[in-house]
Length: 299
Image 1 (cartoon, one colour):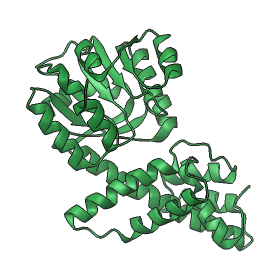
Image 2 (tube, rainbow, N blue to C red):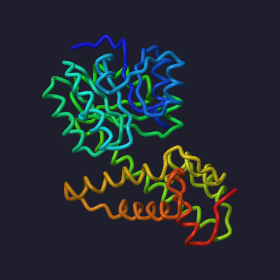
Image 3 (cartoon, rainbow, N blue to C red):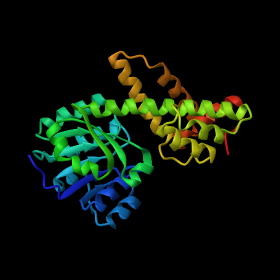
Image 4 (cartoon, rainbow, N blue to C red):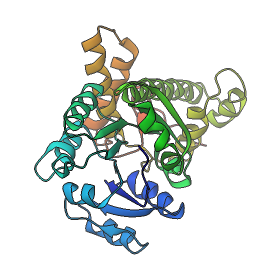
């Protein structure tokens, strides 16, 4: 079936959702929005978006609904709870959940929606706030391929890459894999830069020396300059990465896959949370190593 795409519901206008919704407006989509933060609702409605009162209301007013929420409980509440999307019972409605949640929850929500003739795509994103702002996110999508194809252009308006990776839940499995690699990359970078600093070698020059070789990566280029400048404002907060790694470890235990490196980085992040850094960018992992070595990495 084909959607007119005249109106897109968008629930969750936080660090990621707000710039994503703005990119949809720039692309010419009409938006109906919902969030608990009245200030951000005012900001997006000033750009022409309509405001809904409940998830059910937004579903009734929209051709497609996008959710961008913190974790599994919020997705369950918005989709399946009282006045939730499911209560609209809107045949053929597609919900694109761009939150990062547990894959088994995506499957559960999908099954409930299917009973009412509605569809779910799990479509978590990677790239953090900077890529949400410039519309170059990477989107990993699981779910019905026909529904994916119908909504590809919509997702592409917020992203540089949109890839269908399999059935429902596959998108969040891909995101979990992504978060493993990002977390371990930042930890490895932190170890290396702390070693250079403690050994009396400029960490900035070490970064410049290695970035063009095999150790170079998108993560290194995104995070090393922030560490060197001591800029830890959140592009992706420590507490959100903890949430993602909790989903990683829960899923790994369910399927029987030991993840020793991920478990170690999780404990580092928990230590940072205990030290009061949970709302800083995940590049603050360097502070864990700095504390152990009693040095500070900077230009």
